[in-house]
Image (cartoon, rainbow, N blue to C red; front, side):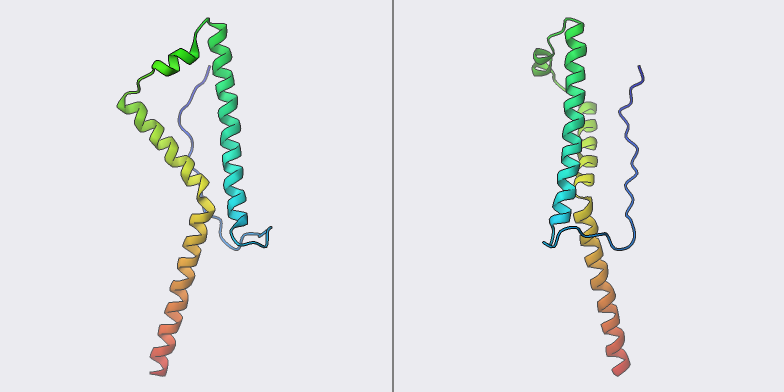
Length: 120
């Protein structure tokens, strides 16, 4: 069986204006976050179901093992890295919107400064 804990980090920011499906500000971002959460939850449920089925086939009490598990530092760091990757995907659109707003302010401020100097 092939097992990997690495997930390719391929989040890239798309250029240009995104389509907007809802009139209410922020609703598209919220829906994107909900879909990321739904995807994660679905994957987690499938993996947990698989683990429970494999454990049962091998006569293991998985629930008791999980309760007794004490993680070492490497496992804690791996979980934190996975959590940070998840949060980056969850807040992707919110971060992108904030970045675009920041860049727009900078461009407007630059133009206003140039106009002030030109009138000067």
